[in-house]
Amino acid sequence: MEWPDLLHRPRPLPDRRIAYGRDRLQHVDVWLPRARPRSAAGHPVVVMVHGGCWQTDVARAGIMNYIADDLRGRGIAVWNLEYRGVDRSGGGYPGTFRDVARGANMLRERGAALGIDTAARTVFGHSAGGHLALWLAARHVIARGGPLFHPDPLRFDTAICAGGPPDLRAARVAPGNTCGTEAVDALLGADVRDAADMFADCSPADMMPFATHQVLINTGKDHIAPPSFAAAYAAKADAAGAEVTCVTVPDEGHVELITPGTAAWGAACEAIFDALKPGDIAP
Image 1 (cartoon, rainbow, N blue to C red):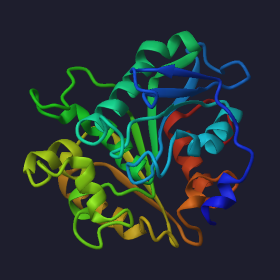
Image 2 (cartoon, helix red, strand yellow):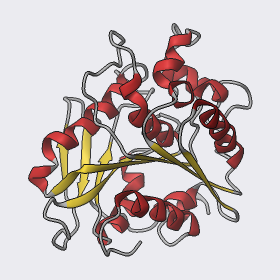
Image 3 (cartoon, rainbow, N blue to C red):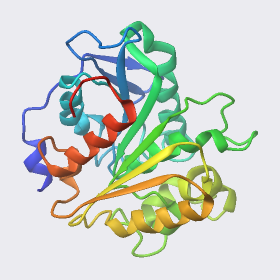
């Protein structure tokens, strides 16, 4: 598939938008199932992070609307994060990271009032958002005193990275990733990009082990994030004692990972439902 195959479809709309900052990109789109929750605690929820090479001009949260709507129809609430990319004022390091962190933390503050069960937490990210999803799951290991430290970050039981670059250090080595090695430099900041502690705070591969089950989903025809990215990351995870599951869907590409009706999105749904265990709702 190519991007127009997805983006030319009628785009569903979320139920509401919640701001977590003053910038118009600092918001969360909330998707709530129409049916009553199966549990008294509320609807199970997925925190979602879009990709786009960490650049707002490449992609925004609306690119995830199709799968967010699909999950909403299956009884899963979605907390879809928007954030400032590296090409926006305040984006990059530390702003992009702080944005997704603030947006995720707001789930704990606002979720219950919206009928969302915030106890079992899963985060799903696509492409560059896959890196950010893993980072959200890992950020509780960041040392006190750093710009990205938070004393009580939202914890995740499962983090799912679909077609993402989980290792920023590897992504900076040519050919690195299809976004270009300069995209990682833009994310980290040219003035600090060579500091070792940047990777320790920003790259999931350098933050392991962390107590979250990680699922990496890739497709055989994905030239943006091929399965070799996941395999190399999984090897590092195994050496660090981290729990990582790799899933490869052979005959699809990057777009299919966030397109309802594809085998790749079906594999992602299986991982989401395995993580949330939402009663008798079928994936």
